[in-house]
Amino acid sequence: MFALVFLLRVLLIGRLLYQLFRFALSAFALYKLIAMYSVKEIFYTLQGEGAQTGRPALFLRFAGCNLWSGREADRQAAICSFCDTDFVGTDGENGGQFKSATALAARAVEVALGLCAEDALDKSVNGLQIVLTGGEPLLQVDSALIDALHERGFFIAVETNGTIKAPSGLDWVCVSPKLGSEVVQRSGDELKVVYGQDGLNPEEFLSWDFTHFYLQPMDCSDIDQLTMAVIEYCKAHPRWKLSLQSHKILQIP
Image 1: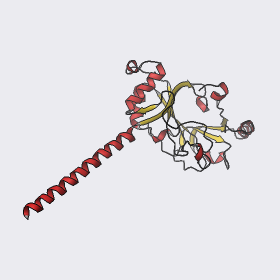
Image 2 (image 1 turned 60 degrees about the vertical axis):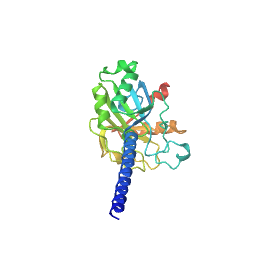
Image 3 (image 1 turned 90 degrees about the horizontal axis):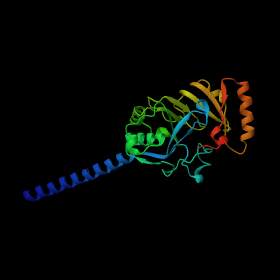
Image 4 (image 1 turned 90 degrees about the vertical axis):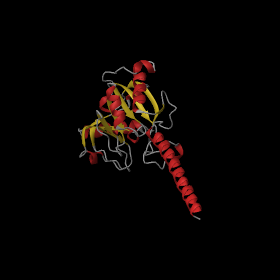
């Protein structure tokens, strides 16, 4: 009887250890998945909007957003139903999944300097602006990536909807709030409000702590009328400035 009880205990302990091992493997696999940076595309162009218009910049667009799935079937029910960007998947130019901040920073340098990956490892971009955008980049941007990009010499800007608190260390924070969302990032360098959202009152944002306040007409069928409305609004409320999507006008990325 004693031997039987002992055997049952050994089997029970063995089963528990096996389950713990499987759980540990699953947790590790999940960690690797979460730790991965999913990037839609990386490309070099000029900043087309807001206070940095005309400045050469490397755009690093992260996949995913918390205000719209990116699926057209979900657009009408989304908080941000007027999004004009494809941020789904990792199949864009220089897109992919990156296992570490170092790997993603190296790829950014590679694209910026037009070098092969091996030659990019020890190169610096000497203050070139990199714009972390999306989708919603702050779903993925962390201190490890900020440090890795700074080590390579990038000036780091972020374009966010403001629903996630920005990590420290960013050089430029641009917030573009969407009506119906809870904005927690109410300070930064630039507030860029898309004009044409139903129920929008720009004056509600003037208590927020930003250096620059921009109104940008929504890219829609009424863009000409909205642009004229923004011009008149800025003239009547001079704390606001007009932002145009000049990259679309110039037909550049």
